[in-house]
Image (cartoon, rainbow, N blue to C red; front, top):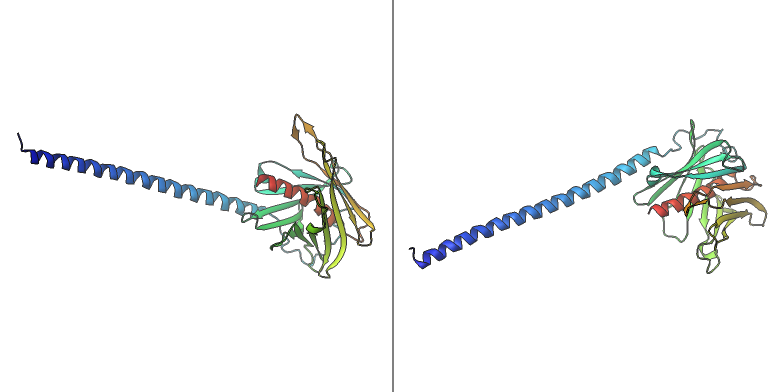
Amino acid sequence: MPPAYELAELDDSESGSESSSQVDVDCMADLFQVCCGVFCCLWILFITVGSEVVAWNRQASCSGKEGDGRIQWNAVLPPETATAMRLGIPSLLWHQVDVFNGSTADGQKLGYWSNVDLFLGNVQKYAYVVDGEGALLEGWRPWGVYLGSRYHLWLCSSLVREYAIEEDWWGRPWWSFGTDKIFNIIERPSGKLVAKSQHKVQDMWSLKAYWTASLESPAGTAIATLRQETPVINWFFYGTQKWLMANQRPDLLPNEVVSFLAAVYDIDKVRDTND
C-alpha cells in the first residue's frame, strides 16, 4: 500500500486535471456566447443597412429634370384630389400615398407620394412620383432642434420657388392634447407667409373621429379645405381613412402643397406606429 503522502499527491493531480478541464469547458462556452453575440450584431446591422439601401434605391429623385418647363406649380395636380395610404409589409421600409383625380378615391390614379426614412429617422425624404415620368416634386424634413413638424417642398424643375411648412407649436390651443394643430406655410426664398392651415379632430370622443383642415391666407381669405373620411370599422379593425381636398385658390397656394399636407399626415402617422 502506497504511503499516505503519495495518495495525497495523486488526489491533488486528479483534482487539478479536473479543474483544468472545467476551465477549458467554461472558456469554450464563453467563446461560443461571444461569437453568437457578434454574429447577431452583424446580422442585425446587415438587415438594417440592407433595408435602408433597398429603400433608398427605390425612392425616386429629381435627377435630370432641372429646367423642365412642363413641371410647374398647379400643373402637376388638379385642384380637387383624394389620397389613400397604401399599407402592407413594404410600409416597414417606405411609405406610399396614392393620389386620385377628383373628390373621391374612386377616380383615376394620378401618381403617389412616397417617403423614406434613413439613419433611424434622421434623414426623411419625400417625392411625388408619376408612373413613367419619375419624381416631379421632392421634399424633406429639415434637420434641427425645434418643436412640432417641419417640411420643405419644391419642384424638380426649379428651386427658385419652394414652400416651407412649419407647425406653429406655440400657437395651438392649450389642453388640445394633439387634436388641434396649426401650420404656417411660407414661400421661399422670399420668406412670405402665404397661408395658415388649422387641423382639427372632429367627433373626437366617438369611434369615428376624423380630421379636417382649413387653409386661409393671412388676410383671412379661404384657400382650401381638407377632410378625412370617417374610419371604416369592421369587427374592431380600422381601415385606412382617405383624404378629400379642394383648393379654391390655386393662385394663392399651389394644389401640390395642399395634397402634400394630407399625404404627410398619413405618412407620419404610420411611421410613428411602426416605431
